[in-house]
Image (cartoon, rainbow, N blue to C red; front, side, top):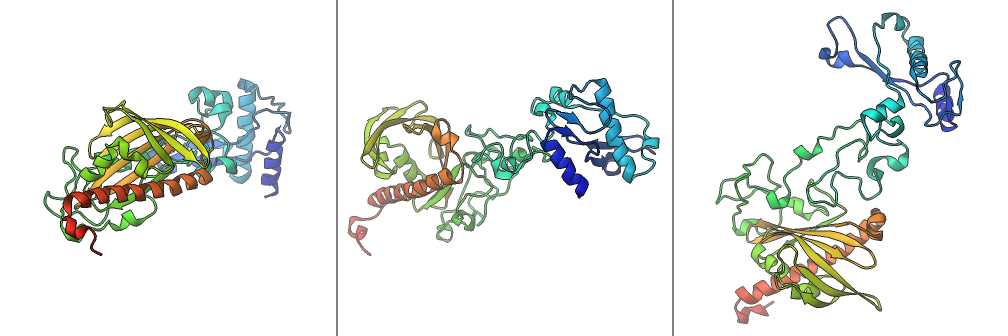
Length: 379
């Protein structure tokens, strides 16, 4: 422990340690194909300062990392291994040394040879990597994912999460025979891509599945993600989303709808509105980026002075009802720069109200169309 403490202190003061810490793995032990029978392929690395102020060893290493310095550093690491595994050096038949400049030339993400794609300090671990609020595979671009050591959760983790994730709700397919009841849990993956989601409108499945009552939708998470079970069919919910004039009734803080593009909600159509924040009024707009009727609507909203945001509504049929998923992610401006738990909390609180208002409008319109007038006001 004393040597490890000294090693960490020496690195932080830009001095190259005389007794380096080395992480060593015996690759052939885990994978016999790594080297011929009767041999062992070993791999090791050690940390060095980005800028070397002083070398505490005998080799006068300066950080140029030419052939001499690379050889000297490799010898130093091998001597450390020899201390704990006598005879190790006598068994070496060949070696390959990768210095910080070589690592960076092989992979531009390894800046200065940082093998984890960046520092391993606490502020770059877990949900803080690469910046707070983006510690997850998803990006603001729909169906584009990050998978490298520079993204959460960091180095040493394979970037194979995307192929194993379920399809987005707009592309989700059914895994049960048409006409039968859907399961009370999310459908498994591996379904035929040319089959559409089918559900049984029986009353037994009129309530949301257990996973729909959680705060977040299963298996996918974004900057601010919520869901709402609405007791009317997707066609009715879509009718509300497709009516630009109705947005003032359910979009939180919207005071007035000033213009609705006649083509709304076609891709490229624009909606202009006034937003109130206390005594202040801002005039903003949103543009349709993706439109899949009765399934998905993605908007790019300008929210002065907070910048632009991506807002996606996904409608999932459930019996005679609808599960609405709302996903919001800031794109530009202060909202994008200040991503993190506080801003996510604010967005989630606002979007919870928004979805409740959307449900009230959709169910109200549906009841007006389907329930006899004499029954509308019955308790």
